[in-house]
Image (cartoon, rainbow over all chains, first blue to last red):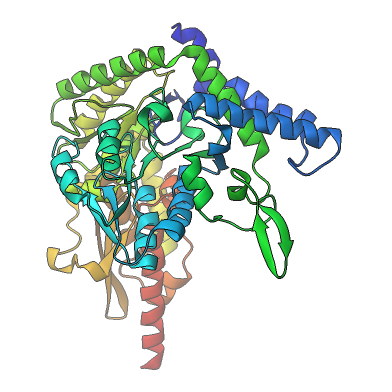
Length: 404
Length: 142
């Protein structure tokens, strides 16, 4: 992979921040967009803009055809059995809320149990807490050890006849831990319990095969995969999607509306009320094509090298604590300069043109586990270079001098 | 000195700094040196929670003047807090309530006080103004 050429695909990487070349290491929050994605979106508004699924006129039909091509493209990307199992949302958060709400209407009653893990993003905790409250169900939590790995022995004891769904992250956004999701799914399936995988941090780094994983739901956001903000996906097995009631009511999701009663459309339309963000959806296809043209093997190899390199260099800086030392990590690396607030580290690095994330990363239970207020987090993408890491490390040494 | 005079003085001080490094070094020094709030006052009711850093603030009226104590767990935030206290402390509450803060902008730290920056500083200023309003009302009732 020629990184110099590849970086030319991302115009924003030439920006200057505080008079320094931008070093963007906040990719777990959102990735930058290649030109082909930006062009796919502007091309839609320049030549194709029209509402989908409604019109008899040519433009609307063309827009609809393009829109449905993306569904097909996502189906191939995730290797789902049917394209009807792909639902467009605004992002992972909406995806999980959709499943939590609709699944629980059909399958969760008082006294039932829902399992999440201690290392989840708030987006995979709060929707379930709301459901638990609404349905008088109970939320059970798989703990993790200090390395940031889930305790599967405890998990096994949590699975019982009252458990109605398990919902865990593929990859932790705060610690970078790659969870053994296949094992988690198999253990749940042995007791006929469906599993949702929060793939927000998984999709950018790994080739996903939902049939091979046999997960029942897989949710992700486009914008962490080089696609625009405003588009996300729920993959769900047909049998569940069909049994679940709609999430939002409105246009597109109905078959017939009478005041005496409304009949709902088939999947996936049943879950897609209202006008979707068509330009963003088309941008998602461009992003998927882009990522496929590079190939996940290349992406994974590059990012694994960056993870190892950065970890080693970071420890050499001294007075550094790395949070999460799981055997398998991807994307994100969390650390603190000992005795220093991560906000101070982030503020000074920003002055040097480096964008990192600081704080609790919307995973407060993870911070509570380590009894810290937050961490500084660097996260990688396909365009991240070793030179950028070197600059980050040199800058961190300067910051350390100022703050320690 | 009036609130305006103190702000102008701070702007003057900051104008001598050559680059961001000097500026932040100064803020960090301020944040380090200043003993601001006592541990016993760092209670839950005084805390302003930002996403990034936390700020504690409490205020009293002593001889008709504001006596504010504040603190933060991040040293840069604490440095800025120290500047804010220098502006507001020992001033009549009415003046504090009516004051317009312009020095933060002028010394190039406005990003720290923008509403999207969740470091607790915006909420802290709001809280100080609320204290000032309460003291003003109390004064006029006497």
